[in-house]
Image 1 (cartoon, rainbow, N blue to C red):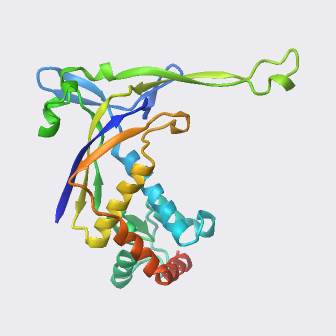
Image 2 (image 1 turned 90 degrees about the horizontal axis):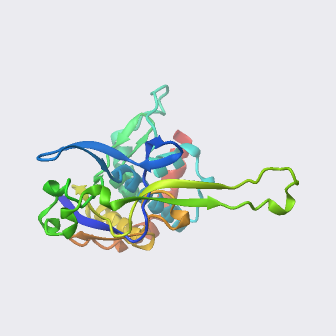
Image 3 (image 1 turned 180 degrees about the vertical axis):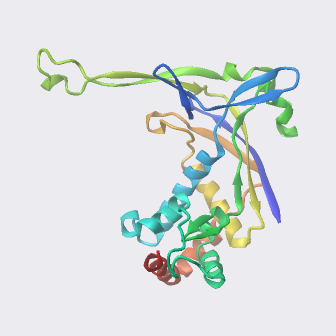
Length: 278
C-alpha cells in the first residue's frame, strides 16, 4: 500500500538552508519562484527534501555499519558510496557490471534500508520506496497548499518574509599570542540569512508498497531523527534544531534492528560479494 505521513516541523533555533546565490558575502536561503492566486509570483524560501533525505540516510547507514562492527574505512569505496549517497550508474564494460534478477531480489531482502532508500549498483538501479517532501513554511503565500490540520494556524496570516532574518557567526583570532607585531589579525564575521525560531513548516513522507521490514526501516529513520533533530546547515553552531510530528505514527524500528542482528553473517557475506564484484 501507499502510506503518506503528513506532518510539520517547528524551528527551535535559527535554520539556515543555503541556496546557490549570494548577496555580497552573505549566504541566502534557498528559494524557488511560485505563483499564488491573488498575490502573483512569489520567491519562496524552503528546505529541500533531498537535504532532509540525505541527512536521514547518513544517520541510518552510520548506525547500520556500527551494529555490524564496521567503519566507513572498512568498506570498498564504491560500496560506501552506494549506501551513504546512493551510488552512481556505471557503464556495463564487463560481465561483472550487470546484476541479475535473483541478486537484485537478494539485495532487497538482505538490505531493506537500501530497498527503502534506493541506490545504483553497477549499471543497475535499485528503485527506492520512500519519497521525502520539501519543507515549506506555513505562511500566507503557501496557505492554499496546506492540509486541513494547518489551515487554522495563525502563521497563515503572515507573509513568509516575516519568518526570515539575518544571523551571524564569528571566527576568533586564536593566533593572537603568536602573531608578529605587523601581522594582520585572522578573524572573520559571517552573516547568513535564516528562518527565525518559531517558523513552522509543512512536511511529509510517503512510503510506496513497503513490506513490513521496510516500513520498520522508515520507523527507525524517524527514531534517529528524534535523537538528532537538526536540519539545514551550520548545526555545529546551534542552528537547525526542530520539533516535529507526523501522522499516522510511524511504525517501530525494532523489526529492522532485529533483522540486522539475526542476519549479520548473511549481510557481511553479501557485502563482501558486492565488494568483489564492483
